[in-house]
Length: 255
Image (cartoon, rainbow, N blue to C red; front, side, top):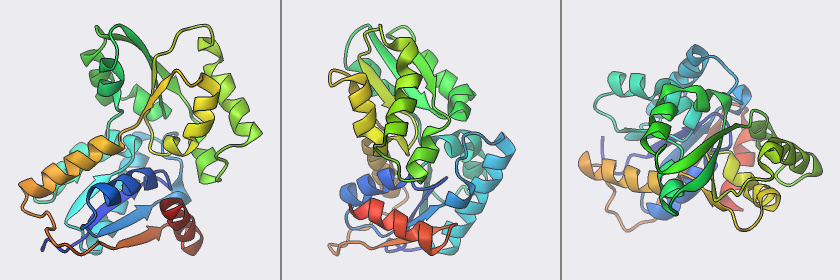
């Protein structure tokens, strides 16, 4: 394994491109391989065992590409499989995601924070443990959004149907003062504009991209795998839907 080997990034579909964008900007000299499992999206409505098996298969594909580290750019896949991945691949950095709850809670005292995520992510012990860390600092509301991943996979990023869906999801909280929203799925930043329109400009939206970039850099340094070249890295795109999925990922990455 050399420092020139790529960093692998996986997601249940195209959502992880939001993390890949941040990584390319934060680590410009690294090479990346992205694998999106769009043929099986969304993961958030599947069983733990199904998600775990799909995630393991995605990691295998990336390791066959010679990846020196793996970023599980999917909160749902992280919750289902990251512990097993770290146990199985002890010599390879395995970086997972968690909702960006800490910055959302700490930006204001006694705030009210909504966490948007898949039903699987919100019901997992990993999220409950995270939520319990900050329960005395803020009112934290879990908001499952089971259909939102499908909107992104269909590239409905700002449609009347999407806005209707979001208004319906937020209706129970319409009369509450919301301080921040955590986008707890890597698909959700792609509909940031629509979410912001529904909740108003005074609500701050947080996602995990910057935190993941810092963690990947720390892990690469710790393993002696950080690419110190001054040559800009390359990005390879793979998708389980083939050329159609790969082209969509490229458009989302470079637009």
